[in-house]
Every structure is written in C-alpha cells, then in structure tokens.
Length: 310
Figure (cartoon, rainbow, N blue to C red):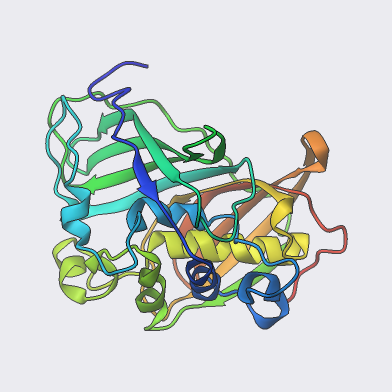
C-alpha cells in the first residue's frame, strides 16, 4: 500500500533492560506469587513475560523518568502533518512472539526498528498512524518480537489524507456462553505503578490531560489492560507458561478509569494452527460498562483443564 508516510523507517533505537525491569513489569501487570518464574530472578525457570517488549519503544535505554511528550516529538513522519502527542491514545495492537527474550539485555545490543505502514485521516475524530515495530538483536539480525499497532491522534484529522482500509475483525461467538471469565480489579495506583516500566504519558498520572481530551480525568494505560489481560489469559489457559502463546492482539475500544473492575470473557474456538496453538477470542469490559478491549484474539497452546475461576 502506498500513501503519505508509508514505508518511512525511523532511525533504529537501541533498547535495554535489566532483570529488575522484567520483575517490575510482571508485578505491574498482576503476576502473583504462584508464578514465581516471572517474579523471582533465582527461580530455575525465570522468564520474561512475553508482552514485555511493548514497553521498550517508550523506555529505550533509560533507567530514569523521561519527558513523554518530548520523546514522542523526536522524529517527524515526512509528508504528513505534525501531530500533538499530548492528544494521543492507543488504537490497536498485535504482537507476535518469535523468540523468547533473555532476562537481561546486558552484554548484547538490541534495537527497535520501526516503519510506517499507514497514516489514515479519519476526519473530525482524528488520525490513525499504523506502525510495525521489530525487536531485533543488532548483532545477528534475529527478530524476537514483531508488533503491529496503531495510535490515534484525537481531533487531528481533516488534512486530506487517505481514509485507510477496513480493519479485520475477530468478534467473539454470540451464540454461546464464554468458556472462561476472569476479573482484574484496578486501583487508583494501577497506572502509577505501571508507568514505571517507561510509559510516562501524563494522561495516566494526573487528571488535566484527560480533562482536555474529554475523558473527565486520568485514565489507565490502554497497554496496562492489554498486558494484564494477556497475563490472565496465559494463567487461566496455559498454566502461565510463556512458551505457550504465539500471537496476541486487541483493539482499545474505550477508556478505563482507575478503580474500574475489568471483566474478560474468553471463548475457545477449537480451531488449531500449527504446533497445536488454538485460536482464542476474548472481550474485556469495564464491569457494568463498556467494552474496553475488543477484537481480542490470541494463539495459545491451551490447557485442556482450563475452566472458569468464577
């Protein structure tokens, strides 16, 4: 596909992480003491939770708090307007797990390599920027994860760009009850902990940006909900085994406020891909409210004994 900005490659950005970063991430998305392989660095099977790479484009090499707005302005996409990073939210995210990450990047050089797949003008609502981001071992060229995601620049449309293609949908079955249902109770502190992974958008820490964007105050990171739901899927369907998830995706449908309870309904499709990975559909709602994660799909090597915990 061609169009404004398509094919533009950002300069490769070096990223790094320590075991401490891996432990923080696992704690921040809700891993529990019965999953010590994510929470204790001396566990014989100590592992990185698979979705950890989604934070690396924010964190990069830093072990310190960063200026989120300044970091987002670092590189302009040629041929499209300059968008305001103070009015941006996540749109949709797909991540493919190609190789397990080492528990620290120490002694090696990793890069995120990002290119533009499309920039779409949605009129008055805003603009969608779709990116592909690979996490790569710079020495060998091996790709560890590939993420395809979109960001939505609120009320920054009507610049004459293409509307973009229709998205592929993965709706859950409506003719039967879910196979698994689980809950995640957020707190006022959920985002304040999660942001320490490197995603320091003020929208998730203080009410003023969210009020300006029409959310009424601060909201939980969309990627917190994305990651915490991935954690609970893996825990309920695959015994928390990080090798048993191959793909994971969701669309960010509506905001979550700190203190909301998230309820995820999961359907096993019985459709198996290569190596025994089953296609899973899921949907996450705010209890008593709207869907916040739609279009949920994962490829998981499921546990035959998985059942509802509620």
